[in-house]
Length: 409
Ligand SMILES: *Cc1c(COP(=O)(O)O)cnc(C)c1O
Image 1 (spheres, protein in one colour):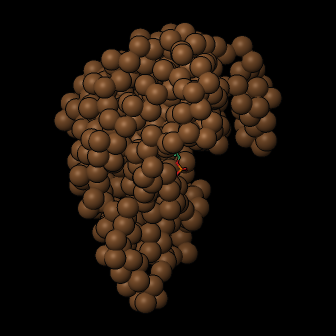
Image 2 (cartoon, helix red, strand yellow; image 1 turned 135 degrees about the vertical axis):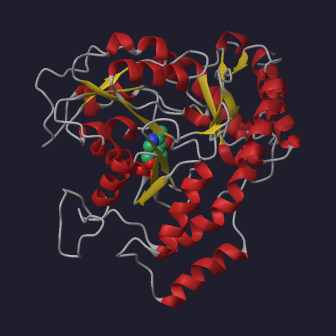
């Protein structure tokens, strides 16, 4: 690096390319008033799952084009309720990708089932349907496709495999509120679809989660499981199933109702910016935006991901590149440093009291595409930056050009 150009990099004390702060969450006085109203009413909880909680569930189900929705304390519990309600038994196997948040797989263990990792497609980073059938055994009961970063999985292919083998499909749509596959809202295509309202997610109430489904039996069971095993038509001190108190508060529901009214516009904005940024970045040597999946009609860009080729950046390691980009004012980082099966949880089988068969062993698992994404290729830009202006997208591209010029000079 020539000294003058090197000093221009923000990481070395030079001027940042982007000086604005991208805000998240986005709210105004009306959100504050909605919470204040509940606060003043004193009806903070929702012991009967009615009131604003039920109102929000109906609104969210309708938004997703699904018949039912069950809210609960977080997206991890939402996934686990859906899996348990599907009727899995101890030792059953569930297919999941390893390039995802821990909960996509840990909730399988918490249901006494065995996560079976199937690799991702190199061009979309979603579960690769062509690799699913080789992983199916007589014990396989379900598939958990993750709409990673808000990009739709190849749902036609996944649903066809599930149908052929009699498997349940639970969409992990924690990144994908409002996203669409062939015009259908994500989460409404499989047996159930799970969402998170954790603070970083595209729809948030700080914490929270929801499952949508069109299956009445699944709905009834999930409703029971999140409400201490009570059942429809039953009385207060009557517990039929092994559930727990996973209910959200009315305060969360009031906020979610407000936030939901902004979701569609925000999603379209991110999608528009994402497509615009794709056009800018594909012209930078050594930068390749992820391909939009087959059937993608609305990408939520919970994360904007591009692939980085260090050979076009003077062999600068990905982590250092990502740190330089963040220093330039782009809310970005290198993403997951390794696939899930490399975590001590799996390598050491720290499964505690859960009934996971002795012979299960993750030390030999290898998913090369996930490893390549983690170690070499993937760089993430977070969703709140994708709510910026077109000019902000130009500046993101300019920041990458600036780094490339500096490291190659
Ligand atoms: C956030 C997330 C979850 C779990 O959501 P929590 O609300 O944090 O429990 C599940 N899957 C994925 C892919 C996530 O990113």
